[in-house]
Image 1: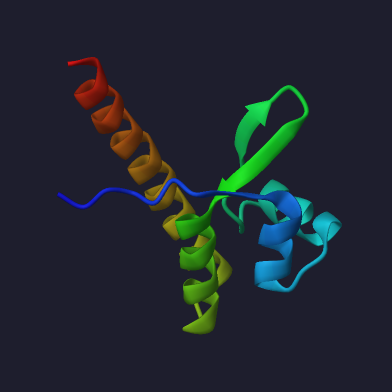
Image 2: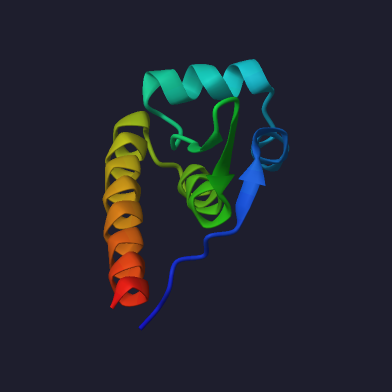
Length: 92
């Protein structure tokens, strides 16, 4: 069974990885063309590194914004499914 990489990277690191500024990244998240961050607390958030890498790969091969939005939906579903499986395994 393959497990998701749950390495969390902070917002600035994710922005640097994709070569964009913080405000541009927030705008893209709001527009639905970049994966949403994970809440780490009341005033902090971060990204799952493997999801950011998937976003970079999609842009590298020329995904359109509509394809990116579809990818984000799939990544969010996978995030939830993988987390539920992990939590089930731990709680068992």
